[in-house]
Amino acid sequence: MKRPNPLSISFSIGLVLFSLNMLSQQNDKVWFDGLGRSYFARDAIGETEVVDTVSTKNSSNGYNLLDLNTHINPLENIEIFAQLRIRNTFGSFFGSGTSIDVRQLRAKGTIKNKVRFSIGDIFLKQSRFTLYNSNEDLFSQDESLFKSYRDIIDYENFYTDNRWRLQGLQTDFSFDFDRLIRTLEFDFFITRPSGSTQLTNSTYSSDVLLSGGSVVSKLNKEITLSGNYVNFFEVPSSGTTNISVRNPVYMMKLRHSKQVGNFKLNQKIQGGFSERHWLHSNLSGSLEDSTSNYLRGMFFEWSSELIKSDSSFNLLVGYRYVDPNFRSAAAQTRRLNLSTETANTIYPNFTNQGLIRPTSLFDLLTDPQLYNQELSSKLMYFNPAYANVLSYGDATPNRIGFFLKLNSYTKDQWLSLNLNSGFFKEVIGQGTAEKRNFALVKGNLKVNVQPLLNWEKELSLSFGSANEITLRSGDSLANLSLYTHQMNLFLNAEMLKKLFIQVKLRQLAANGNEFLTFRDDYGTINNFMLTNFNFSDRLISAGVFYEISKTVYANIQYNWWGMSFADQSYPSFKYQRLLFILSVKL
Image (cartoon, rainbow, N blue to C red; front, side, top):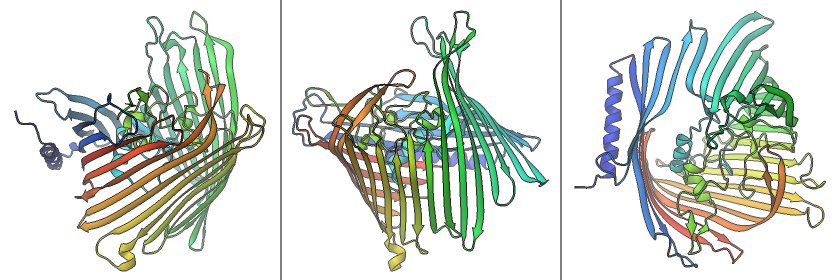
């Protein structure tokens, strides 16, 4: 039997989506959109200094998938949404290797044109301290860098606009006034981030719920006052364990906006506090008054932002204090799950000794399995070499300091500059009275030659750099120093209309030492381990990118990636990959 051609299958997916789109135009109550993707990768071991006869020299994998979004409007103000995924692994025939799943399901609508609601899969975001999905470690400020990989990571993990995808009920409504205040907006939700699961033959964990709400009031043209509340908690009666977490967070924010000539000045003051403890229940299931591991912490932030009317210049400066005991599960949960239970998908082991391959830049960019979609009640493990200054986003506890952000581009956009920096210090020391000092500087410079020389075809060069410094003085036990530097280089040249030759480079170097922290089930630090870092991590890519339309593109690229270690006792590794992606979005 003739093996199916990936390109012909991709064309069929696009034809199906086009047909559904034409059909939807004929029926106002039912309409369709979706996404189709063909993915093929061939991985191979590069030149090795250490013998590896256990791993396969090369391997290939790939799939076709179709996400069909069905929108049904039984009434004018009601919509039912379902996303059906059909996925077929390359090399599978007669239905084997094909899976069909309901990926999303949601109903939303408006009651009497006043109260909006959503039930099912919803995407929620409040603030960076209460409910927020922070960007991954060493996030690049150039969105076009490794776009094909990034699109897959974000799409597969539902990362949209720093929102967490949760299942539950949300409702919002608003009021307008003609005196005292102008508007008053309310937003409430209750979700279940995770359900009860079996731990042993006789024990079950409890349901985890996240509830909260927001109130926003526009007092006048310049002043806005808002408040947020979230509570991450467990329902003891839904499981058999005798402890249940409680983590409410409260915050208020005051914003003042004023037009000053060609600039808009925004000033914000926000602050709040959190509580976290565990309730204990007796054998009958009733809650006792006793609590354990009680923590109470606060945060405060001030910022001032200057924005030019044409958005060509944006400068933000601010000051932030986050208490060591501040805990906010919905804001401090990390995207990257780098726990020891998470293994790399591509060549997880190497050498004849079967060493576990460390997670590299390539894995962070290409492996959706490393990313997290569930909220965590305690601070998750992280690798200091990839993110040590703000390991849990802006809500990282035990930080005090200043930050600055700058975005600017010329009128014809031939030159653009992005800068993100921060200088922080620990509020209290960890394991010692001495405190760590942190510095973070990220920047990206992009030059577009097309408007500069009035060329018809696009030609751009982008250079990015990210630097993190961690220092702590003291005796030989407390002293530490860690420096990490990431460099990005991206050349994008249009050869034919919408056909681009692209060359990309990302490199990370880490040098120094830092203490890894280990926490118990309550999130309390119970041990430190001194770890030395001295390695270089790199990913080089060259290929062709064809932008068929704004929603359809094809990309073929070749990757060279690996890590080199200064410690000769730990072997370096090199790998290669040939990648093809066809993405169709309607």
